[in-house]
Length: 91
Image: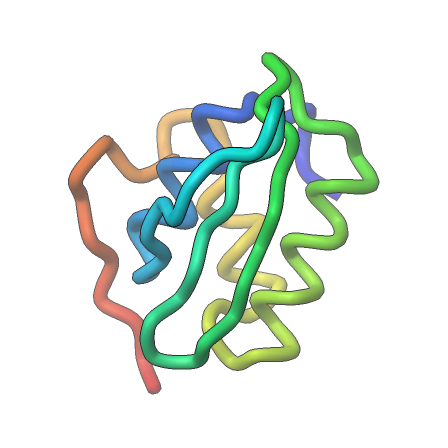
């Protein structure tokens, strides 16, 4: 399991693998992945709970967007994609 992850780090990771911000309902932000139709809702708290990180990791892996090993590798400090940076993924 990766270290504790901030909401901003998770948001940057999602945007870098093809998710788009689709809206907000209260404190929860919704992201959609155009190629797979995956919908992911995350609370926009400062720190992500380990359960929410695990759910996102599993969902991205199961939908073929990002495998678990690559997900954890990208959440290592200094490797989280910068805002606007798109990752080249092997599909």
